[in-house]
Image (cartoon, rainbow, N blue to C red; front, top):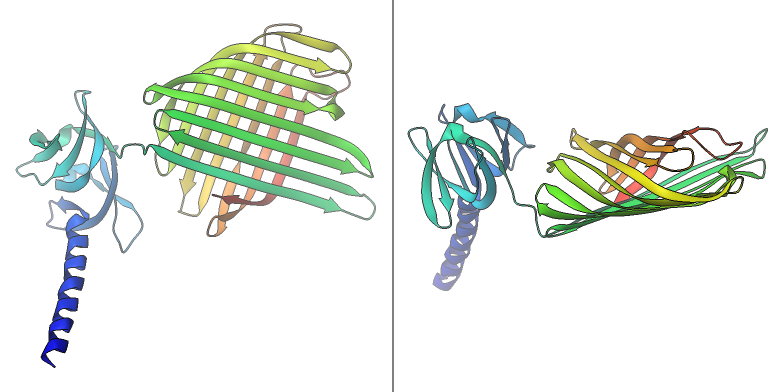
Length: 337
């Protein structure tokens, strides 16, 4: 009986240690009204501290109402004078916040904290695959199929991004669209969030008379936002392009490049996205090519979502007999992994 009691006490003590250590290791925000909020601090931004407790979704509290912050993990911190440090937070007092920089404590006025974000992990990847199909029968027999896939892979200071579009449209047995489009971009973060790198793209659409179009260039860009809820990056550059139309033959020359990518999460189950790129050809008829994809994703279950998007293509000088613009409203499902 005594052995059994000892085992029970040991087990209870073990569980208590685990629970207590979990609470100790959690981040804490001490408020001026005496409240102590325990959870996971993700960032300090716009004079607010963002924290997710174990019992609710992430929310923000005003930094002006905070007495002190305690968090063991390292943040990239920007101070009011523009300087940057990598530090963790320790409890402060009397309007001062203690930062731990390389093992040494440093006290600063709370109001000097302007930005604190978790360092970007060395490895980070996110991919999507969307499948969109519409089949109609009866008076009009049509088949519209669009498969879109994209991925973003970051390894330290290097990021690789790519996307692939395969579109096949058919009406009454006649092909009306056969588009293959591939884009690739390499970014080297020489001074995060600034980067430079290169880009490649390939497109063909024989129905529009485009036998092929290649683009290659050097780019310079910046991540405006890159956190858990939003991402915005812009880049510009210059390069070389070659294209061949069935009606006018092959042509090539210098080209200017512009790209924008934006995503924003809402309500924890919905995301807005908008991507567009511009390719201006400084040869031939000085063709300007604009492509965009704008829409929403709605979570269904786990990593499966429904999507709706508007895809818009425009060329000032398309192939002979082809329209300048092409608009497609797409409904489908996809997966994130």
